[in-house]
Amino acid sequence: MQPVQTISLSAAGNDSTPEQSWQSQLSGALRDPKALLAAVGLDERWLPGAEGGHHAFEVRVPQAYLSRIQKGNPNDPLLRQVLPLESEMHTVAGYVTDPLEEADHTPVAGLIHKYAARVLMITSGACAINCRYCFRRHFPYEDHAASRAQWGKTLDYLRHDDSLIEAILSGGDPLVSSDARLSWLVGELDAIPHLKRLRLHTRLPVVIPDRVDDAMLEWLGATRLQKVIVLHINHANEIDDSVMKACERLKGVGVTLLNQSVLLRGVNDNTEILAALSERLFEAGILPYYLHVLDPVAGAAHFDVPDHEARQLHEALRDRLPGFLVPRLVREIPGEQAKSPIEAWPVTPSSL
Ligand code: SF4
Image (cartoon, helix red, strand yellow):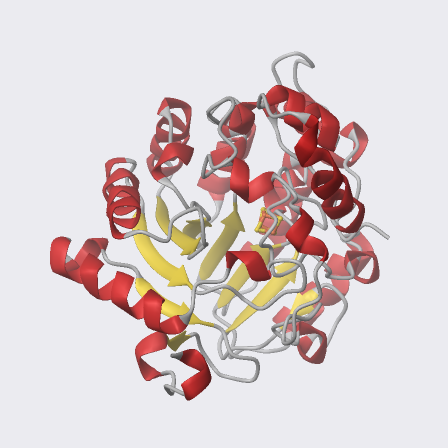
């Protein structure tokens, strides 16, 4: 079974001009390994790996993102994030289907309550892009269907726990949902008096910048809740002029923009690249927030950067950037009350 749901226009809410709408870009995302290779100018030597990985976690790349990939370059840092490789099929000890043990923290279907004062709502099981390193690539979204009935139970949970001050919309990607559904949901959250903040984790403003349209800005701008959007950007090449414009529009309705990256072998495991990413993020009005080490999810071991190397990269970054451009280097440990700084992670022979 595919871990991420199929997107249809009706699921996304087709309420704009078909040719230009974000919905048509979403439904038209490239989803065939052979077509991906053709689009990026790679020959069929890459096909067995691409098809093997696609079988486990399907290829999905929207055109707007594809256009930023350098043709004929198998090492392009954006391509590496979306092209399945043969190594995805290797079984590697310690790499599992639920690396963060989220199944143990779902009191209500569609809701993950791991940390104090905040809960995460699985708002959609679909994404606009399928990232090969995704720690939820095996998440059983079909058990957490994002229906209104399910959201009703989630909202009841939030209403009855006044220790909660922040609702986090995640997924999949929450912005795959239609504006009508999101507007309703955010309105319900708005009416819960103890909530102060709304946070969205999304890649859509990066991979389909047209998602940030008037309809979205209307419901986002209307809520009394403080708004934070955490974007997931791993390389400066992901931020083109259209992404800059989308960020500007989000800031225009009072959104605080943060970024979290994943440290990925062959994508951004280099001080120059990480420094350029921080600089480019700041140009777009986004603060670098977290640099995560890879969660050990099955199929993604080839992206791993060992802790000692991650620390060296981070130290070099601190030496060359002002503090506000240095993201915190962290990992998520199942059962911990917050992200764990890598500096606090015990050094063991196996991590050296
Ligand atoms: S957009 Fe986020 S949730 Fe979706 S595949 Fe990429 S990393 Fe995973």
